[in-house]
View 1: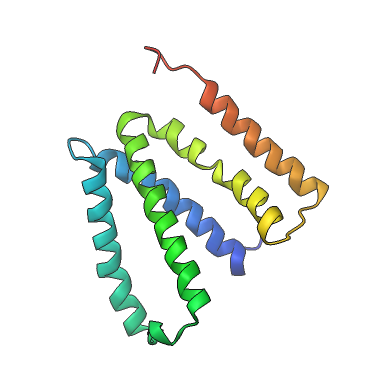
View 2: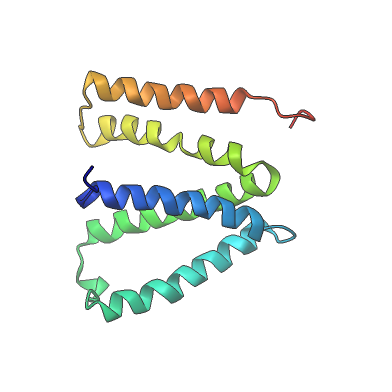
Length: 149
């Protein structure tokens, strides 16, 4: 068996860290407002990422980027922030084992948005996989937990 490389490796690492995010966040938001928790999380990310970018020599003047690039990075940042606020709020009132999979409905939405806006054309097999993810999300979303929550 060979280990994954390239984008697959990074995507798998992303999935692992996203899973840990749910677990750590669920523990960390006990007794803390979810919006404040999101702010603290964001602050820590800046504290870690800024030196990383600087020390790896990847820093460049953001103002030298095109207006279109800055606009879409800003929109991405706003979407990320909104996602985090909603995710932490859901984690605070729901079970991590249900919130995180439903959050992954984003996989289905990315495919739909990429089709509509980026002209990407998944194959029939890829659409079948996307449909299975959607079905799994629906199964989890419709599952009733003991106590009716």
